[in-house]
Structure formats: C-alpha cells, structure tokens
Image (cartoon, rainbow, N blue to C red):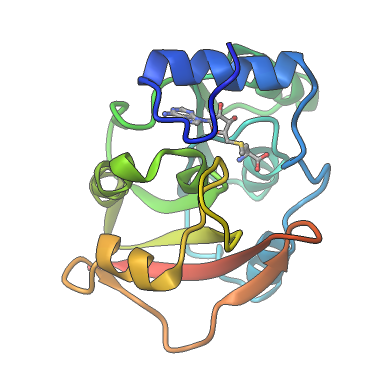
Length: 205
Ligand SMILES: C[S@@+](CC[C@H](N)C(=O)[O-])C[C@H]1O[C@@H](n2cnc3c(N)ncnc32)[C@H](O)[C@@H]1O
C-alpha cells in the first residue's frame, strides 16, 4: 500500500508503505554517499567523544557503517524489512557488528542511554502529529550531556513525507529546557534541487 499525501497512517500501515518504497525502488532520498553534514561534523571532530550512537529510521544509509568503522557502538533502527536486511548484510560483509533492529522509533527503547543520536530524514518521514512523541523518545535515548545530530528537512511545502521541518517549530519540540541549541548557524546540506537539510547539533541537558 502506498501512503497518501499526508501519510497520517498508523505505524503498521506506514511501515508497509515505507517497505514498498524500497521494493519499488522509489527511494529518491538516498544519496548513495555520506551526508555532507556527516562529513563536515566528522572533519570537525564532533563525533570524537561519542562511543555509542542510535540511528533511527536508518534505511539503507551508509552512516551506521561509518560510525561503526569509527569504533562506535551502533544501534540502527528501521521498520522496513528490506532496509534492515540491507544493513545486516553490509555489516556482515564488512565484518562489523551493530544492533540492527526492525523497530518502530516511537516505541523502541535502548538498553541504556547513548552518547549520540543521528537523525537523517527520520523526523521528516514521521507525520508532524507524532513529532513531540519522537522528540521525547530522543530525549530518553540520549545521556545528559550527549548530542543529537539533527538534519532538519526544508521543503517549504505542505504535506509529505518528507515533512517541512522549520527551525522555529523544531525549537519548540526540542525545547530549551531540555536541549541546548548552538549559537552557530545551521550547516546547509543540499539534498536535491528543491530540498535542503539544516544540520544542527543539540546538547541534551
Ligand atoms: C526518508 S527515509 C530515510 C532513510 C535513511 N535515514 C537515509 O537517509 O537514507 C525514512 C526512513 O524512516 C523509516 N521510518 C519511518 N517511520 C518509521 C518508524 N515509525 N519507525 C521506524 N522506522 C521508520 C522508513 O522505513 C525509512 O527507511
């Protein structure tokens, strides 16, 4: 079943819709390479103090593997079986290990909180009605003082996915009582001719 324009389906149906995007090869969000923001943050040494990371809605992205190659303990989550099978095979081929779990990001819990969270087009894949629940999950997952590496999708359009994630709205969801926002401007990661992701590193209070 393909999702409708507003994708307000229940998690199970939404999972089927995402799975079908993989089996239909309708995955235009995939860059086939590391995100420029990931490379920028890596080169700035922003991941250096992180020993563990959760990558929710990881799909077939290369970042979970890149984190593992840096020696980090990786939890990679997605509810699309094709994406999970891809990650499992890639890790097995590379001789690396990770917790690769078919799970709903809105209900899953880690064994213990982690140093880092890397969100690359997961939040914008969720219907905005559950954004606060998702932000609450991230807050539970990350240790005090830990980092949330967020890529906020900018489409400037109604509807989705991907859903437009303006910074003003994000500042309410990831509120200042629970997260420190950086003074530095967001990193502009071009996604396609129409879309840009704004990379922001939040520090959990
Ligand atoms: C736009 S794709 C991005 C995939 C990956 N992060 C990347 O950059 O290629 C969104 C991903 O989130 C997953 N997803 C959406 N809602 C989810 C949920 N509630 N729980 C787990 N995964 C979810 C989808 O299956 C899909 O793989």
